[in-house]
Length: 407
Figure 1 (cartoon, rainbow, N blue to C red):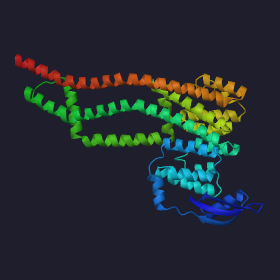
Figure 2 (cartoon, rainbow, N blue to C red):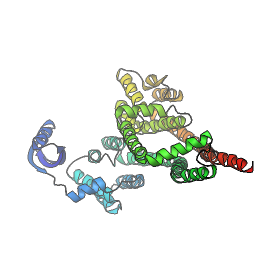
Figure 3 (cartoon, one colour):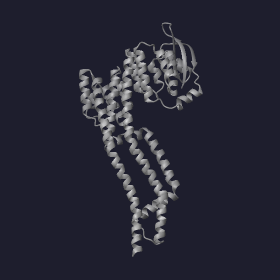
Figure 4 (cartoon, rainbow, N blue to C red):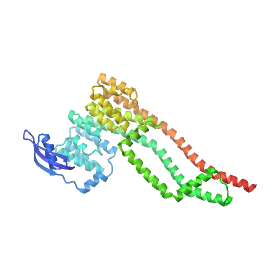
């Protein structure tokens, strides 16, 4: 796909400028024809290699940068600053090189006649589906400044929860890495040395305890067949990654993790909170229920919930209320369809779901704090067990040999 700028005339004879992505010039002409436009000139946009590399490899746009941009754009639009001037100002202020390049392209597209939502939609790695759809709804309803404020709040909430989850997982991951490294260090260096000492003390016919023999056999295999261990680890990692990135594998994994004790409960609460806030934000922006369900299902980040919401959307298409389609679904607690029913009756579904989102975000905070306090002793016991096993395999034969020497 290439980008093209065009100048065309509409049915009233007015000149229209814009940009469009298409496979070739014929695709641009066909696209303009569907819109009732007669092309005057079409030019392909030459993207510099340096800029293309910057977009692909120039780092990430952090949530903090996006939140600041959203809040500032909302303030400027609310104050009556023209959109193009606001975009130009914010582009010059941002320090993130990738974001600066993206805003430059967005600014150029808006200058060419594209809507802000359509300009954002060309950069899915920066602006999510939720962001784009809410901006489009805000432009259509003439409440862009209010919608941008909501977006900033939602992004801050999502980022806060994401940081808390990462913070809770950092400690056990570090402990696990240390444990694995310690295990390999012991197997490759410590156990062989101790095994040699025991054989020297007890002689070639010394009878070592079974646990010691097992540890020495594992160590010997890992040292002699290290390439096999490395190969299995690499191949296994690649296969697992491919499975997790495949549609079937991702769905199976997501269905599995929500059933894992302790962790599954947090994931379910997190998904429900994200559903409630995202769906409420889209409805509040004036997005239709079906479109909001489609966007929300992909924004939750869990295939199990995505499939459930796709199924719910089918029910809504057939004339059912959303509360009816979610009733009895085990992924959603009973409070969700009940609160949805109340919102549908009063016409305040968005407001009701915001309260539900606040409640479940607090539940997530509490659950994360609880599991963090549980993980630490569990990991300590695990590491202690491993050290104890190795100590037993070493101390057992030493004690036996000392008794033989005394006898």
